[in-house]
Amino acid sequence: MKRATLGLAILAALLVLLPAVVRGYALSVATLILYFAYTGQAWNVMMGFAGQLSLGHSLYVGVGAYAAGALFFHYGIGPWAGLWVAILLCVLLGLLIGFLAFRFGISGVYFALLTIAFAEFTRIGFDHLDWTGGPGGMFLRVAQRDAWDLAHFRGPPLMYYYTMLFLTAGAFVLCSFLLKSKAGYYWLAIRENEEAAQALGINTFRWKMLAVAISSAMTAIAGVFFAFYYNNLFPEQIFHISRSIEIILGPIIGGVGTLFGPILGAAVLTLLSDGITELLAALGWEMPGIKQVFYGVVLLVVIVFLPHGIWPGLARKLGLDR
Amino acid sequence: MALLEVRGLSKSFRGLRAVHDASFDVPQGTINALIGPNGAGKTTIFNVIAGVYPADAGAIHFEGKAIHGLRADQVCAAGIGRTFQIVKPFAGLSVLDNVVVGGLLRERSAAAARRISLDILEKLHLGPKRDLPASSLTLPDRKRLEAARALATRPKLLLLDEVMAGLRPTECDQMIEVFRGLNRGEGLTILLIEHVMRAVMALAQHIGVLHHGEVIARGTPEQIVRDPAVLECYLGEETEV
Image (cartoon, rainbow over all chains, first blue to last red):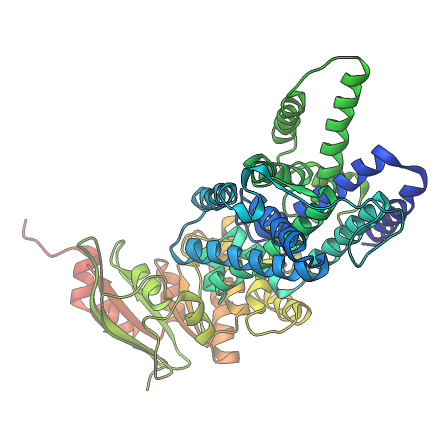
């Protein structure tokens, strides 16, 4: 525990000091890593802890982004107010999916299919929703500022980096707290054996719903960030299933159900895939789709050689698992 | 009034009659056994009591309150703990954490649940194995873990589904001592399904015999071993050669 705490403190310090040495493109890559670490952590609450496989987390990113984005676009309502609307909408959607699935005994891959279906329905819905620009997308007024304007969430790239760092750290603390609490024990029990969990007095329906609510709320926040970071939203892009897959690859590569897995996985995947793209560009090779091929190879290697992800084995090697 | 009263319980699966019109009592503070050949309906009765599935007919009262129709978690919260014949450990969790999950039913904090869990693990001779993953346990240890987890929910009535199966005679005697101790020391009421007659005879004050889903005999162990209906179902009818 001591070594792990020390390691964590060093990592946190490095991340806080990172912008001192890293700027421009590299800083945007670092922000992207944190974004995937955060959304991966959010997904991990549902799948890694409670064992409920969601393949449609782009739903919460998208709805969160569109909710806060549209309120700003149409009414000038700032992101801090829009955030709550985004969270509320996403939690309600999550609970609706959870209710349908858990009440009617839809589990495992069928639950995963239901989550895909909801994300796809919503994508098609937004394609036909003129209020948010339909398939043509919605564009928030870009106001690049050098000064931090936290109230309107406008500022230099540095501000977005620190926001994402703050969110990732917050998610880590929240998840480590949850894991040690009653909820954590109950989720793991449900993940391992739902019937046995129920026989020990656990209302599995209620605790699974809680996992969905927390996971969707966390992901909604990422959506709001997305909207004000990228400033443009297209249904095709934000709700697409490949976005959901991107979210879950980090925790799977890093280690499902672990606290460090989503962070490690996001770093490994983002650095390697950007590194490959950079390398090929430097060599003057244009290879569209190479990123996807690369993802596939990394996934295969990890699944074959590290079926529990990179983190559990690494933690044992470093003596951080106790 | 008995702690558990089962009246006219019936349950069929797609026309297959598993339990038919079964009635029996489990008085407070006693150890009771349900015995019978394979397929007699013993586990079905357990599952109906524990709320895994509803009965087709009949009533179950626990402490005078109707519990038929409750979900499994509600039955457990009411004070009935159960083990599974086919063990269902939380394989990825440590032995201790398996028990802590049970302990959290009545304890507010994980620390408090941990304390009572450590006590229970000692009682069931699992103390030295508490940090191992449950998946690494042998079958006899998994049976013990089933019992430990159920005990951590602090039940008033414990349903044991063949916890002695697969144990060596010395291990079996050890388990018998554990449950006798819990019964005498803490007044725990126990209903067990068992094939190991050594355990049944050593523990049970009352025995019910099930055959083809019906209760064909009830009584003390001495009465049961002399009951002609029981002998017939276990040894077959006397036939003339």
